Image (cartoon, rainbow, N blue to C red):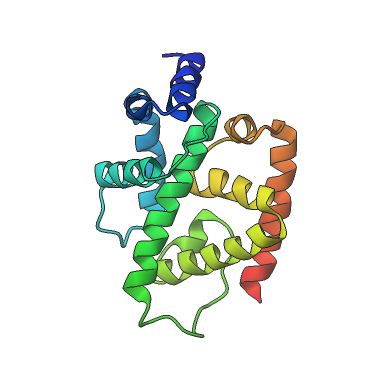
Amino acid sequence: MSGGDVTALLVRAKTGDDGAISEVYQVLYRELQKVARSQLYRHQQHTLNTVGLINESFLKMVEQDRINLENRAHFLAVSARAMRQILIDYLRRRSADKRGGQQSPVELNESSVAGEHREEAVLALDDALEQLKLKNERLARVVECKFFGGMNYEEIGEGLGLSPRTVRMDWKKAKAWLTLELES
């Protein structure tokens, strides 16, 4: 199915066709698996599997009153955000009693969320990302798509209505800001 067909399904979903969003999930299932695997790799302490995470994100999206998704890339970006929120909520519940001032500084890269302090690093990154969102929502959305969604610059640009060059520059700015925030 082409990107235009997905867009047509999303238009149907906007107008209240409850089955259209299910069709989009079926059409984009393989891509959603890629996003879910990427999320679960970063959150290895989680008990959900790929199918469970996709299903949870589907439920989270259909619970919204008005689904306002523009195209395939936007749908994948929103799905990545929903998956991230599900996993972060799980980690917050799980480590509520162990969190405190003992968090160590981390850098924004794949290895920063590896090892025995993975949960604390992911939660610290999520807290910093929420702070970035207050300062510059676009930069935060780029991070969500790139780091948590595994999307490339072109996909992010398509989903956010930006050029790949702008996405690349935003990624550099966001990465620098988050690194400073995580080190403090």
